[in-house]
Length: 218
Image (tube, rainbow, N blue to C red; front, side, top):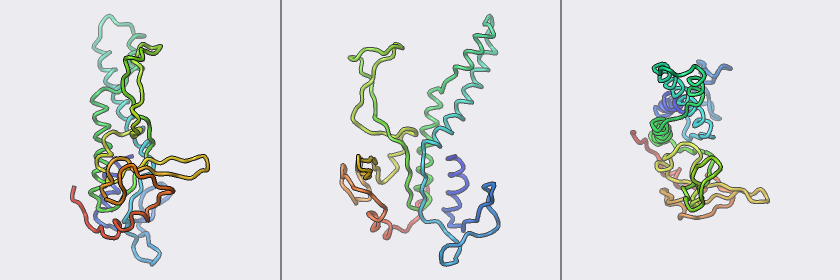
């Protein structure tokens, strides 16, 4: 999960420590991983593919804590049937403090990646931003209807995009071609906001990669 990335792998990369070959159980062996020149392999680029998985994992962790809190609350209740207590425990949901922690987890992961001194790419699912629309009435459950703002946001950790230098929304056309739209300001000053790139690839940022050789202490 993201805590393992932050506590184990990113510090190892930041210290430019040589990587080790992994055993079948996922732990490091004593055999040093070598690159194509038979030298100790040192990572200089990080790809975190699929933040949605990390988000769901952290969400389940906080949900388990919410269930425990519900159990504690029901134990202090008097004149409440065991069935009602069971329903309250099973219906436990994430609380505002849990969502704040989730947001911090996402921001911390990106900040740790920024502080690693390596270039990095993080992928995640996208969704349309929705806002309350009272003029549309309510749904069958009595909730206020929502409408899209036209903005694309991450489906998972919130606030993490603020720490990324380039944000790109990917889409595929009917012919299978991939298109990337630069969202907001490209802090690498490679592309203007709103630029659509056909079949984007890392070589487009080659000048940034070549001239960047520093470690940001976080």
